[in-house]
Length: 326
Ligand code: ATP
Ligand code: MG
Image (cartoon, rainbow, N blue to C red; front, side, top):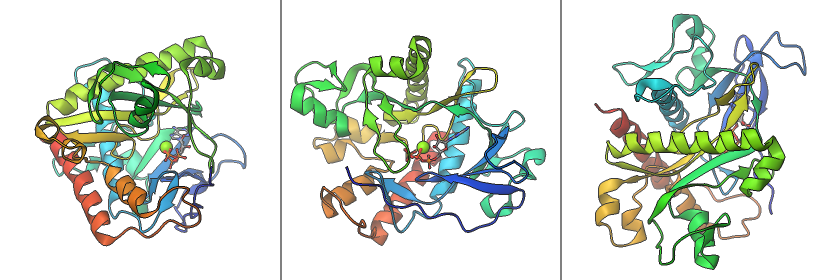
């Protein structure tokens, strides 16, 4: 297991905020007046244009990606808060942070929060409640592909869950399955774990709540995307606990980084895996890296070529346009 590529510390100073942490894609800031080591009430989550695959941050970044991810996350938080007709799922957007998409397709931020978001990161930043994050990546798969397909081919299971015989890469599963992973500290690889292991990590009640909520969100989101001719093949959620003990949806949600999205028409008529899984997501980058930087992937990854960068931006943008179209 190689170490992940080092993450550059952001060089931009953001007035009113102090840089606290950088993940592979997002930079976290706390209010400048927060005492060192203290947990503030609110944080600023800034999505960068960085792209990671196989746990390595690649270069160059994907221009406009941070903004697309933020807009898409905010759109989904809003749907899941009830705009899709379902019950309201608590999310980490700060209380008065009812972001909605304006007619121009850009995220609108109420004025009081707008003033908190520095111009340098406008459009790709969210003011959020800081949560006690759970160390579990809540993965839901409705279709068989990626590491799930690899495991199924080996022994007929996905994360230990037995599946019917005879499935092919890209097939729809009889029903969506919950396949959690342990969220490894920065610099280590996430690892698939059993449901029982999540019980050990967070207790029986929280583990069941995580599973049920993840499956509920997936089902609602998949219904939404299908209405727009898009398949939500799989996705990953992160949750945290707020000050009142409420399980809260955090980080990014249902973005092209955290999900696999395919064109439904191509899937229905395609005959090869490539034709069936015409993706609106990071698979373009993963596939290129897999072909051009074989395992064990040591040292620095090769630079992404311009056409891969352009195609990724175009597909991320197309997804947003399709989903938000009336
Ligand atoms: P990846 O998402 O690629 O697996 P990562 O999670 O390490 O990697 P980022 O998503 O870039 O990288 O980092 C965002 C970090 O912020 C994560 O550690 C995430 O758990 C944390 N985070 C997100 N929302 C909140 C929140 N509301 N409160 C506290 N931490 C949060
Ligand atoms: Mg993350």
